[in-house]
Image (tube, rainbow, N blue to C red; front, top):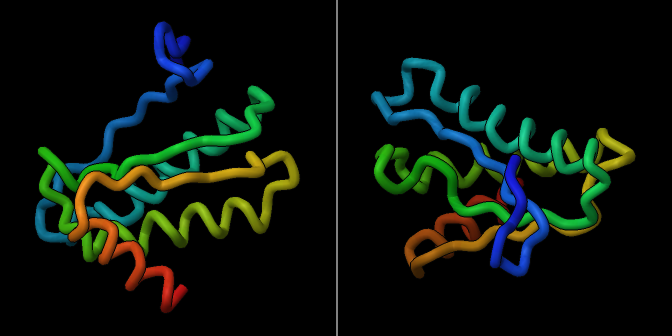
Length: 109
């Protein structure tokens, strides 16, 4: 975690998503832990909100159709279980295809 510097955010929580290797190397578990660990750190710091990109779906090649359900499930489960969780979680998605994948995933959550 670093300060937000000149950003409007007070902090930046850094995480490294898994490299996609076909889904048989524990990628879903690793990806879920990225979201949970960020949320845990935000809760420990008393942060009221957090924003996520679609972790791992860029250079690391994680298919967004596979990543979206993992991300949404990890966040939803954390929010249900943790009393100190941030009150606002945003997903900042950078293209229409990613937005569609998240919309489809949330429909079945």
